[in-house]
Amino acid sequence: MSTDSQTSRPVVRPLVERFGFPHLLAATLVLVAATILLGIAAKATGSGLACQQNWPQCDAGPYNLLPANLPSFYEWFHRFVAMFAGFAIVGTAVAAVRLPDVDRRVAGLVVAGLILTPIQVVLGRETVTTYTMEILALHFWTAISIFVVFTVATVLVWSSRLTRTHVTGALALGAAALPFHVALSPLVGGGISTYGPSMQMAQYAVTLVLLAAVIVAAVIGRRRFDSARLTTLLSATTVLAFVVAYLGREAVDPAFDALYVVFTGLLLVAFLAGIGLTRRASRGPRDALTS
Image (tube, rainbow, N blue to C red; front, side):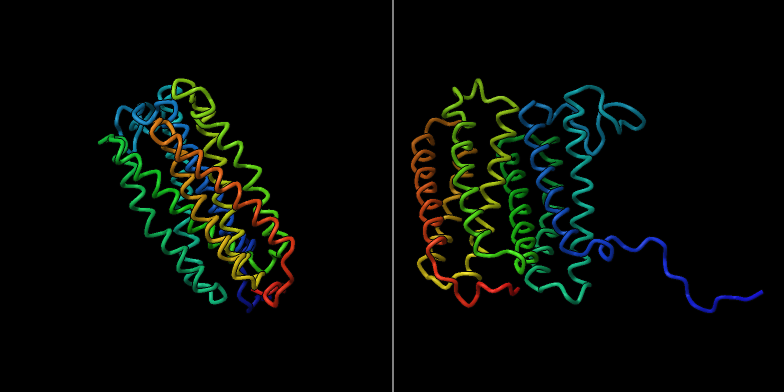
């Protein structure tokens, strides 16, 4: 009876080998975005305390691990997806550090997201056990910070495939999304009384699109264009987008209405100007498909 002296390979290869680090990073980004939107749903439906201030448990089933009703389900499902997002962040960070071909800038960004994750978990617990508006705001902006660092990392990883056309497309997407951001805000929607869960989730989804669009435009624009005027405009557009995101969250307060309108108008002008400049800009040496 003959024996095989060769070591057999594992049947199931690690995900990072099967799909590649860029896909793992992109999947993690999707999970982070989904966690944010589900958190908005829990907040908008008033479900944040539906698990009877239990954390990480809920209010039904063995050891109170399951939701007892629909409001509890919103909060429970948010935590459930957040758990997988956390695992994905840890796995992505380990892969970024251990894989030799991962850009050190990307690894640094992913590790920064990993460092922010336990802070976000603690803040999530505090939104249940010690509910205050300040803690809720910190919880949200920490989530946005994680989203931003993973978006930048993802864009850097895929940058070799992104060209001048993608910069123009990202700016056009931002310009197209901006009117929806305003239309879904309490400023146009009829005030806080009609600012329901569906509108809130839709507006925050548009917010994530806006932030992702300006990040793509700014990061790839610096690589594909040599125009100092254009790169300055793209940087200014990024700052304006974050200001609009902040004011859009505060637009439930009439004191912020005028500022929201002004900065939204400035952002729209910046998007349109960026589209014009990128279409006219000459193809520079960095426009080649290089990482």
